[in-house]
Image (cartoon, rainbow, N blue to C red):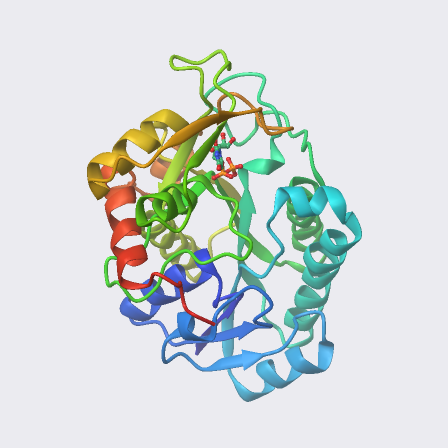
Amino acid sequence: MAILVCGGAGYVGSHCLEALIAAGYDCIVADNLSRGHRQAVGLAPLYVGDIADAAFLDRIFTENRVEAVLHFAASSQVGESMQNPILYYENNLSATVSLIKGMLRHGVKKIVFSSSAAVYGEPEALPILEDSPKAPTNPYGETKLAMERFMHWCDVAYGLKYISLRYFNAAGASPAGLIGEDHTPETHLIPLVLWAAQGKRDKVSIYGEDYPTSDGTCIRDYIHTSDLAEAHRLALQRLLAGGASDIFNLGSEQGLSVREIIETAREVTGVQFPVQTAPRRPGDPAVLIASNRKAREVLGWVPRHSDARSILSSAWAWHLSHPDGFGE
Ligand code: UDP
């Protein structure tokens, strides 16, 4: 029996794929390679195509005995979603409808889903709990929430069992050194900071130093891809054992400011790269911190690699060994 990893060539998907294979699961990957990288899947069988394509899905489900699906395939840039909501409703929501229709046509009823802290929007209280108010502030978060609600109704109607994992800020790279973060365009703080340390950029812009936080910069909850991968393994195990549908936050509960990330990056890399203050980025909340209590209590998940040093040193090792990312 195989596990189908949709979007397994992407950043979080490839890290979870690597961990599932290491844990002994037989995995196959579906990815359209629009943002993912062929090299990121290693030796796992790769079907290149789109989950919106029913014939493509039928071929995968016919050629393999799929037991469960991990679904990472989505567009994930907040700014792009504001410019092009149609792309996000198509690529995220419509494609997920197609995927679940395909699963149900072939009797596959278990799915671990990649959700996001973006479903909450600007938090009213911290830390953020799974049942905190959901008020997405962009089409990206809106489509993640819509996909969760869709899966809920598919459980009610068809008995689909889903575990939705709401990531906070995914960061870091696999300790094996073969995969890491490689987005085009890159908008995330940590890779941009490390590019500055490598001299690929001349400086880092800090988007706002006048937030109501201890050092004036935004605070985020960074979670290492190794910890995300372990949560996916536990969620999959739970569904395969007959567990019910559920939703979990995946964060470390440790807030780190933009300044703290920069200082840790300077320590880890030994490079005093320049920084400049830039205007706030529209839509950035001052502080986002998860409660991960439910994932600890129900899944038995313990994040072990999500301190600033572990995140930055693993990401730095990836950047040093792959200065041009996957080079694709
Ligand atoms: N950020 C920054 N400079 C950059 C990129 C990001 O100051 O060049 C800040 C951003 O405003 C946010 C934090 O770093 O407060 C994390 O941003 P990122 O885009 O990595 O993740 P997000 O929290 O938006 O998902």
